[in-house]
Length: 126
Image 1 (cartoon, helix red, strand yellow):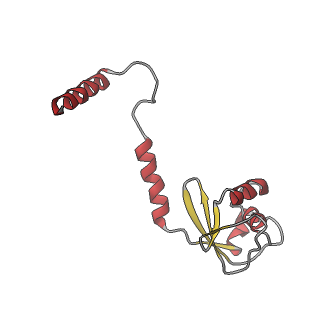
Image 2 (cartoon, rainbow, N blue to C red):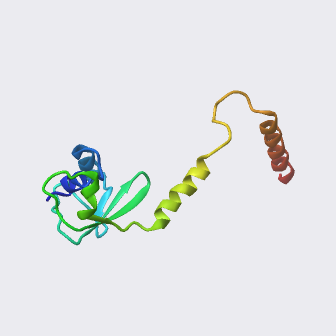
Image 3 (cartoon, one colour):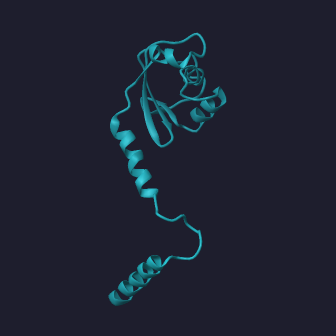
């Protein structure tokens, strides 16, 4: 079975076109090698799929005949993604959070004080 069809069948990607595009962009790998969408998949292989800034590791248990229901997906794949991958995304969320959206209104009084303190600190060092 083709890798793009397999990833679509086990519901990693919503459409087969998205799976094909991910293969072409190099987001799907086996043994560290980029794959073409037409690469054949066999049982026992470990597939690494980069999706939403997470490197999912999927072990192939079987090949379905066609797209399977969500309850039956675990018969054909085993998710062996380390927990560290999910923890990285939590850290990214905290790094991106800021109490005020960028470009929304004038700086608050606290923002102004922080800017002034920063400018004073940089001028003292020079």
